[in-house]
Image (cartoon, rainbow, N blue to C red; front, top):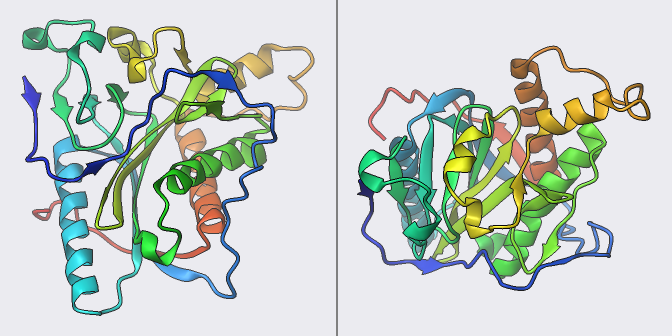
Length: 283
C-alpha cells in the first residue's frame, strides 16, 4: 500500500538523462553567501533516534505552515534544521514510477510513502542520517538549483574534511558521489520559498534494502556508505595508515553528525542553536 498526502506544491526535479562526471573542482560553485553575521537556525537533534517517517513528515509540514504564518504577519522567522534517522521505509517522489520497485506492492518489505518531494524511489533506514532543512530561501538565495547544489556542497565538505574522502557531483544528476557510488540522495520541496524534505547520507546503513528497488531510478549506478568506503580504504596497503579506524557504528554516526552540523552552518552561514524536542508529543 502506498501512503500519500494531499499534493499542491511545486516539485524540484532531481533526475536527468545526461550523465557526465564533472571535471571541475567540487567547490567551483562557491555557494557560501558572504555576510557579516550568521543568522539563527534552530536545530532539532534526534540523530541517535529512529523516528517513523510519517511522523517526521507531518512535523516538517507543520513547521512550514508555522513559518509561512510568521512571514505573513511580518514576524521573526528563524530557519530550522531537523536531523534524525528513520525506521526502514521506502519513499517516492510526486512523479515516481512503480516500475522502479522490485517487489509486489501488496507484499512490500516496508511501508512505502508517496511524497511531494522531487525524485524517484529511495530507501531510508538505521545508520542513515537525514537532514531536513526548513529554511526561508528569501534570506539566502531564491534559486532552487542553487539550493540543491548547496546541499551537495555540505556533504562534499563533510566527506573531505572529516574522512578524507574525495566526493563529487555528476552533471545532470542530483546527489553526492564517490566514483560510481551514491552516498547522499537529495529530494526537496519548496512552498512559498520555504524548503522541506532534504538529504539522506548513508553512514553505517545496511545497503541490502536498496537492492529491492532501483534507487533514484538509476539502473547503472550503485549505492555506497561512509562505513563501506572506510573499510575499503583500511584494507588498502596504500591507505591503511592514512585512515584512522572508527571503533563502532555509533561513533561513526556521531562523527558524521557533528561534521554535518558544522559544514551546514558554514555553507549556509547560519548559527546553530540546539532546541529541545519531546517527540512523544503529537506533531
